[in-house]
Length: 146
Image (cartoon, rainbow, N blue to C red; front, side, top):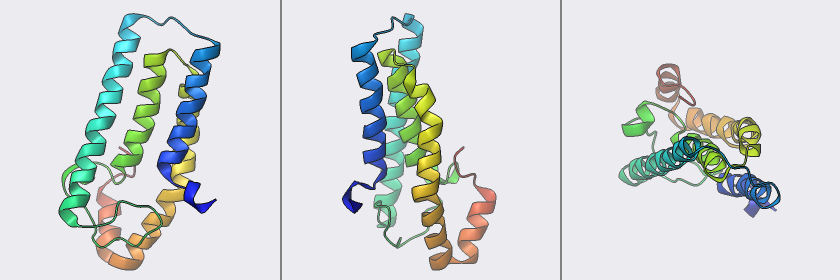
């Protein structure tokens, strides 16, 4: 079951629940709400891409549960310590609005909690173990989410 304990799996599970709501109860939301949802989904994709670029530049692992090779503090990581997890939540909210499934708005804080408890806290501990005061200084100046 460890192969299932990755953030994209949790995101896909939440999106599956949201999509199931659209099959059972299709809400007709105003066009501007759907457009907002599309915009948020596109923003999430941009955040993913910017974060992936920084991982490539640093030649560090993007895979949770692994020891990082570098402390990434540049680019999008100067604004958020967890832009990929932030993108996960924004994508969930955006697609929920786009699809007219309000359950995603309820699931978003649950996903934040899961990502924080199952991944972020352990990743931050690994960063402190690997980079010590440099990581602590980064945590002090850069917020966890936004």
